[in-house]
Length: 128
Image (cartoon, rainbow, N blue to C red):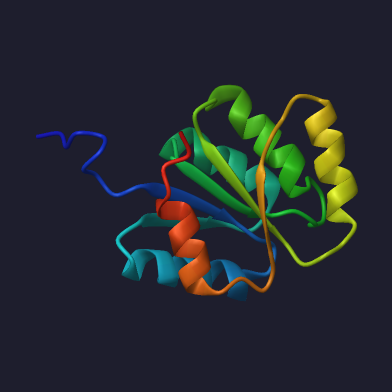
């Protein structure tokens, strides 16, 4: 039996190269009624996105290898309705975000550290 899309828990793919952050976010989201899966690098996140078809990609921006913005762009290429929420504590991210905007990609950004209540409010909000 399938559940209507609006009644099933939102699925969230969490990407952060700092495993403790990714795992902590996953626990917070699971306890708050989300279906959450972690990835620790961009390539793995893309593989998991193909399998999970997440509603939301929650990802760090600055990471070794494929950064969060490039990962989000690749995931959106095959999941155009996936909502992207970027997390970063680094000022240099604004240049990367502006470059993505100039290329036609628009993502939301929250600054680390983010309070769990603020994150959950943002994830529960209807982006439309």
